[in-house]
Image (cartoon, rainbow, N blue to C red):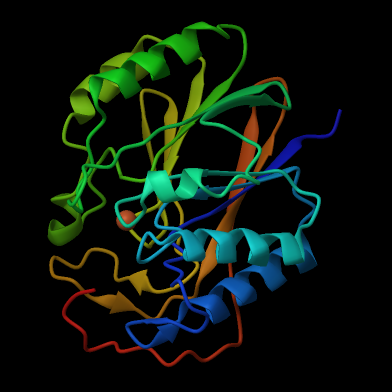
Length: 261
Ligand SMILES: [Fe+2]
C-alpha cells in the first residue's frame, strides 16, 4: 500500500486584498511560488495549513486562501487550524472547507489543535483542547497519531520566539506521554525549520510560505532562507518520512532591517 501523502503549509499571512505585503514581501506571490513548487513535485492526498493563514483575520483573506489553493489543487482535501493572526469565527464563515479539527486518513489519527490566546502572540492549550486531544488519541489506540498546532510546544533557541512557547506545555506533554502511539508533533509560527525529539516523538517546525525568521537569533531578525513547505509520507505501519522543500532561484524584495512584524 502506498503511503498517505500529507503536505503542510503554514504562516501564509495573506491579506484581505491581493498583493498585500509583509516586511516588503508580497505574501500572495510567495504562496504562489510554494504552490508551484508543490505542484511540480507532489501529488498530495491532503493539504494542511497550520495557522496564520491570514495576516488580518478577515473573511476575505480566507476566501482568497481557499480560492488560491483550489486553483492549484482543485481536488485535494484541505484542512486548517488557526494561528495567532487568525480569527476562527471568520474561518468558520468560509464553508467550503471539508475537514474538521480531527480526521483519520491513511491509517493515521490526525488531531489539529487551537493553541491561540486571543490578542496575544504566544500559545496556550485550554483545558477543553487538552481534553479533546486526550479523547481523540484514546479513541484510536491502535493507530499511529500526529498532532498539529500553530505554536511551538518547545523552545527553538531564539529568546524572542521562545517567549511564545505554549504556556502549559507541561500539561500538553503529560497528555502526549499517556499515548505511546503519537509519532510526531508539528507546528508553524516560528517561520523556520526545526527538528528535535522527545521520548521518541518527532518535534517538527515548518518554514512559512512567506518571510523566514533567523534561527538562533535572540532578537527579531529576518532570514534570507526561502519560503517552503513540508511533506509527510505516512505508512500505515506507523513509520513516516518527512522533508522540507523550499523555493529556489527567486529573489524577493524583503525589508531585512525591520525590527518586528
Ligand atoms: Fe504565528
